[in-house]
Image (tube, rainbow, N blue to C red; front, side, top):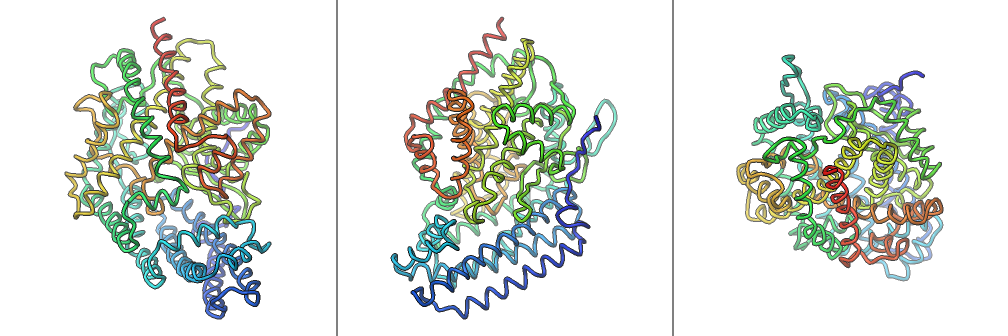
Amino acid sequence: MNQRNMKWDLESIFPGGSNSKEYKEFREVVTRDLHTRKEIFSSLQKSISDASRSSWADFLSSMQDLIERLNHAASFAGCLSAQDVKDEHANTILEEMSALDAMFQTIMTDVEEVAIKTSDNEWAKLVEDPRLAGAKFFWNELRTNARKKMEPRLEKLTAELAVNGYHAWGRLYTKIAGDLRAEFDVAGKIETLSMGQLANKMSSPDRDIRRQAFEKLEATWRSVESTAAMALNSQAGFRLDVYKNRDWSSALYEPLVMGRLKKETVDAMWQSVARGISRLTDYVNVKRKLLGIDKFRWYDQIAPVGGGNLKYTYDEACDFVITHLTTFSPDLGALAKKAIDNRWIEAEDRSGKAAGGFCTGLPLKRESRIFMTFSGAYDEMMTLAHEIGHAYHSHVLRDQDYFARHYPMNLAETASTFNELLVTDAALESTTNADIKISLLNQKIQDGMTMFCNIRARFLFDCMFYEERRKGTVPKDRLNELMVEAQKTAFGDILSEDGYHPYFWASKLHFFITEMPFYNFPYTFGYLFSGGIYDLAKKEGPSFYKKYRALLADTGSMTTEAVAQKHLGIDLTQETFWDDAVNRVLMDVETFISMVEE
């Protein structure tokens, strides 16, 4: 069997990369159409009635088509930039896309002004039009949210200023992170590694390698801490100024709206998590003994134990993922196989790539592209399964109206984490070797610890940082202090006093993503929510697949709480569901400890 290609196919989207003639022409058409839509809007009647309703339905439908094409172009540029951080033309195109998106948003702001002036009765008639009915939830949500914004003139100005201000800081950070390199000593041989490659080293069974990777990561980010702090403060300052003028009292307001989520739900989740943290202490104590260390530090969190360092070739990882996703659903397995065989995945381990991993949609192709770096570790196979989950979620929604395909970030982690659970349990069931089972259980529990401690630390940091940022710029040293304080609260007594990661605020991309503030709680939400779904899948068997697919299909057309109530019959604002979900994760701790003792 031929070895699978680890580089993705972008040529079938637009041949020629960032210099593609077809891509350039596509962007030019989108740009022209955007200007045309602006002109059409100016000619529309500014009230919706029997006489103007059809024209308005046509116009709004055309805006949906336009943003689909704009996002297609932007997604392609994002792929180009990720595969080669030195592709300056791709980065220029991303800036161009950001400017076009801002223009699109100014037109949508004009639409919002008309929407809030339209009577409930007239608006209801409009969104029931067949051209809009498929995305009715989106259009109603747009109108509701518009009532809590600034006057349209200021909203448009804000969107325009954000291109070269707010979003520019995010692009600057991505550029800085992509350019960073560190010299790494591997058995006397010096290698030059990116930050993503360094991060992968922290899953090594060799503590000296983990320590060196962590120290190099800290030192490298320390060298640019002033710039990173400036970027973080500037982004947060922009947000807070906008929030003040919209009369949004809490920095959490926007992420909750974007998550189609109630604060009571997030509070209930974190309260349940906080109660469960202490139960991880016994696991960490046993892991310390297995590692032969007296202190548990940040870089020990994802250290493998048990059956040694589980390694996979890319082919082995692909085959394992396809096989066990198919066991749950042939449809899911077929999508995984298609993604791998058709080279939707960029997995090659090389320098010059951006750090991290993602799945992005190419809406006009009804395809996804997955970006990651695969070097053979077990957790990278989990990343593969995770990102294929995102691709499957998009696949389920592919034939709906474009605005009905947009689901909130907290529900975005549902299918991805569900895949991880499927593959992890399959790995546990496929071996009788006790050492390997211990290794896999360790992986499973440390994933839970990441969601309960690492992600919660990010959330706590954001909360404290935004509170202090209201009073003025937060110095880089204070950012370090806030990060350590957040980690101490989130990890309890798990990490040693000298075992924290003060520069985590600088090294973690998620703090700098301008499209999604507080990009932290969605991970823990998705992890626990999908765990509950996975439990039901195990209880009900193969018949559950149809319910699972139906749930995913509704994620772009309902609030988060409504999706849970309709498909699972649960109230997410109550701690009962979250307590059960947390306990389900922590049950593995007792199994892990007993297996180690045996």
